[in-house]
Length: 427
Image (cartoon, rainbow, N blue to C red):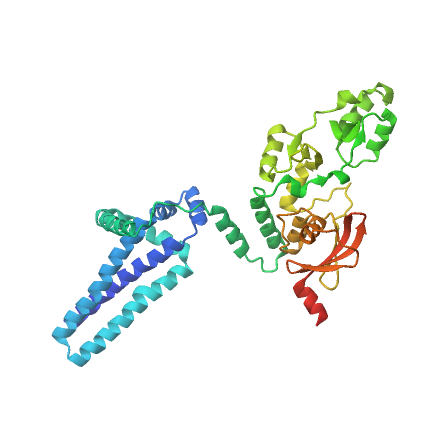
């Protein structure tokens, strides 16, 4: 009978120790985002997990105290039983068996189980752990105070908190997400990363440069302005006076043709100045997230970008920002061959010099630096500190970049090849 009682007691102690050990792994490893999602749906167990994680030091302290007590009593009880009922040889064997079983089923097995079913395990143990933490709070608080005091004696200020790493954790989770070759899943991953980037990317990186900006001289005859608008695919066109950088207003093509219809197609009765809306100028350092909010607040879709000296740099539209999230949007007026990039059989890409680096990185999952230049031509000139000649090839950031075309002082066309693809081609 005494042997059965001993076995039952050891089994219970090891089971409780294993349960507590697994609880530690599950609660610390449970996804914070998943728990918040479940809590919002009304799951009380998830709310308890969140509460335990918010007081992680107390939670872990309680678990460790109980676990250490159990792991202390198991060998003590085993030794007391062995000394009284077993021979020296049997005692040694008993201690070895109990030790092996304790390590396996009180530590390794429950932690493996908790890692495999982290969220489910955490939700299951949360009510029990929450109750234990409440009961053990006085003892654990005293031990915490002793530990904190000892740490402070070492000159460590444990009250200092590191900056919020929520964005980094979210980016890491997105990067870890495996698309499994599914194109839709890969696109979702790109979109999620792009949304996070809105806080860091400025309008200067994605704006339409002024050399590609369609503008009209406000002093032109009304017939000429009408012709310009007829051949224009844009819904809003800046009008300038005296010099192209002196923008006096924005003309909406819909507003112009509506006025033309009202005046029975009599161009002479149309007063251009009366149709213009006030131009909206924004600094090139404005972040995309801020500009997106500004577009919503002002109910505008178009803004002109200026540098620190007030010189016109280009324009940005609501569609430009949306394309940063969902990718290029081709409508019936766009040239669907104008992306500026052509994939080559050798793994390289021929790109227009004005192609944004962000577009290249996003489309091919590359990592060309984006901090110092917005376009691939700007990046090459920034790195070389000169304007390269046609035919020259350079290795920059693990990419082989060949200059294919140069127009005066501008790089017109380049070929970009990842070093790995270039090496395979030469093998």
